Length: 87
Image: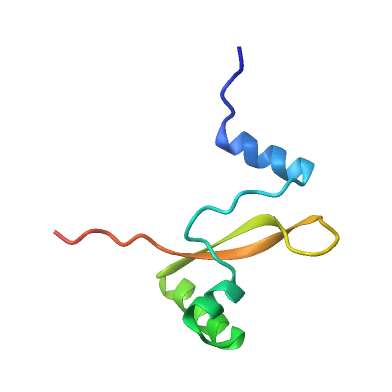
């Protein structure tokens, strides 16, 4: 019988073994947001950091393979925060 893996344990094991994590939908790097918004990386950085400060976006780091050496590195990803529904 195979036991169900707890999500927290999966993250801990990935950190220990340095395996890349799957980035959830909606999370993008600053470069991806800059391309999506058609602005420079500098302006995207300013917009995103301001949005995080005022609570419109959230930041999470994921282990992602992004270099040629094929090692996963912690990379910041940003996502729009879910807004509460108006009644």
